[in-house]
Image (cartoon, rainbow, N blue to C red; front, top):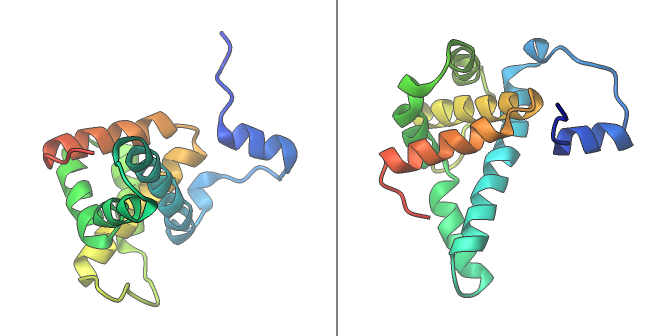
Length: 146
């Protein structure tokens, strides 16, 4: 059975790197990457579903890409997560950060960091479809229409 080529495959084919055990990556590195993974999902959805000028896209994306919303999203998903996913989320949530976003509650910020760590993990384990599935489930549970 042929496996679909992923973005990660394409990146590694052009920029070969030594293999890294994902379990050894810091949760903050996973969150750093996961922030971009979540953002690409949201930007894709808003580009396809939001009409008008780019400022409308930015406004809609900003409603969904912030610590408060991301904290709500992960809380709506916790019973949906596998044990491995829950472990990665907790590592991200509990990671010690040196700063907190300007307009974020510390608890929301930590939960959002956990969500981002999970999305980074899913991307690096080539399970991007699961990240998209979790967004869909969470949006449904929060009654969010994109």
